[in-house]
Image (tube, rainbow, N blue to C red; front, side, top):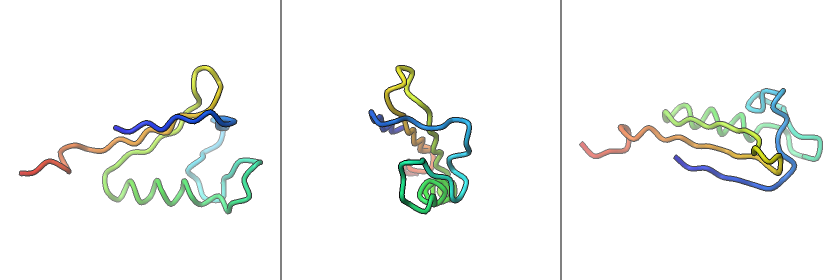
Length: 73
C-alpha cells in the first residue's frame, strides 16, 4: 500500500472524482487524469481511492497493490 498525503484544498467528496471530465474549480485540465489512472490501475488489479484528511487540510490518495500478483512463484 502507498499513501500520498497533500496539504492542498482537499477534494469534493460529493463528486465521483474518477468519472471522466470531473475536475476541481482551480484546475485547467481536461478532467481525465484520475479517470485514466483508475482504469489503468484496475486493469492490473490495483485499487486507487481518494479521501479528505481528517484535519481538513488536504487529501489522501491510497494505492493498494495485490501482493499475490507480485510475489514470485
